[in-house]
Every structure is written in C-alpha cells, then in structure tokens.
Amino acid sequence: DFTGKLDMKISTHLSPALSAQVRGGGVKSFFTESDGRVVIPAALRGTVYEPDINIDSDYVLKKLLKNQLKKGLKKWFK
Image 1: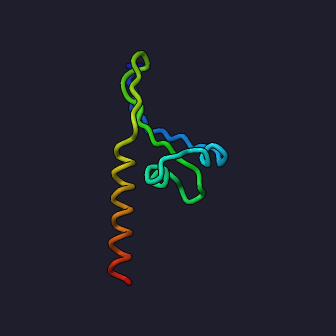
Image 2: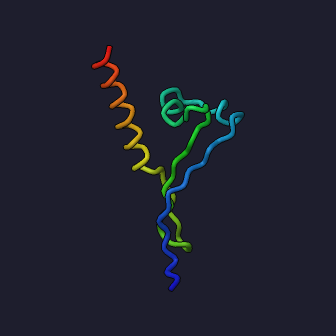
C-alpha cells in the first residue's frame, strides 16, 4: 500500500572545489568533514506531493555533543 509518506535522512557532500568556496567560519568548520568536504545534512519529510526538507537537527545535535565531548576530554587529559 503506497501512502506517499516521506521520512528520510539525506546528506549532500559538496565537491572539494565547491567546499573551498563555502564561507561562514564556524558554520563551515562545523559542517566540514575530516576530508575537507562540506556536508549538508537534511531531513526529508511530508509526502511525495508536499515534501518538506530541512536541516537534519538530529545530525546537528549529535555533532554538537560529539564536539563538546572532545573538548571536555581534552581538558581532562592535558
């Protein structure tokens, strides 16, 4: 039974050349992976007739927590 509902996590990995053109300081560094490419995480919801795409807040929250944990561990092990 096809309901047409959407609930997906997707991400766009920019090319190295395009990633180099992205500006934004802290925002850019937050979304840049270890290989230097900028990743744009998104959540696709809604229906196939009325799709809704937004930044994936789960991804952002997990990345924030991971960064804070790294900072905290560095302080403890200095």
